[in-house]
Length: 205
Picture 1 (cartoon, rainbow, N blue to C red):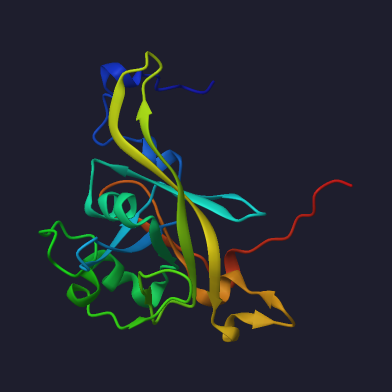
Picture 2 (picture 1 turned 60 degrees about the vertical axis):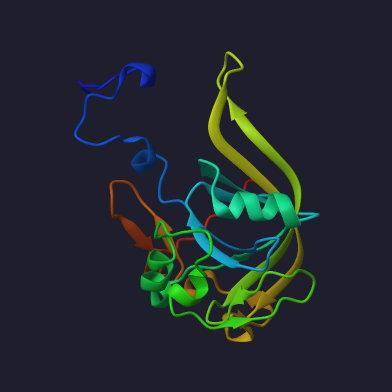
C-alpha cells in the first residue's frame, strides 16, 4: 500500500522544505535580459518559465514580486531570453543576486554581450541560443477568489532567434549538445541535460 502525504497548500506543507517546485521539476530557466527606460541593463534568471506557442513563438515567465525585469519590460516592452548552460551556470547564479536597480547584472556576472537585431536589450554572448522578445501581455496573477497575488506573468512574442551553428547537425538543433541546465527543487538543485539522458518516443499516428 502506498502511503500518501497530503496537505492543503493554504495550511502549509508540514515538511522540511516546500516540495512544490521539486515536484514540478526540472524546469527550464528564463534567463531574461532587459534594459530600463534610463538605459541600465538587467539580467536575471526565472525558473517559472516556458515556451507557450509555436507560430508565432510565444514564451512566458513569472516573477514573484515586482522586480527590475518586470518594470523594465513594462516600460520598454522588450527583452531577451538566453539559454542557461552548464558552462554558464556560475554566471547565471551570480545574476540572481539581489542588488540595487542601478547595478548592471551582465557586468556583475562577468558576461560579455552581443547586440540584438530587433530589440534594445543585449544577449549573453556565450549563450548558444537566444531569443529577442516583445511584450504581448503583462498579467498580475489572482487566487481562485480573485484576490491579487504579488506575482507577475510576462508573456512575449519571439521576434528574433540566434543559434550558434555548432548546435546544428543537418539543420536539426541538438538539444543536449548545449548542455542546458534546469532548475530543480530545494534551495540549490539544478539538473543538466546530456545525451545520455535522451530517449526517443514518437507520438501515435
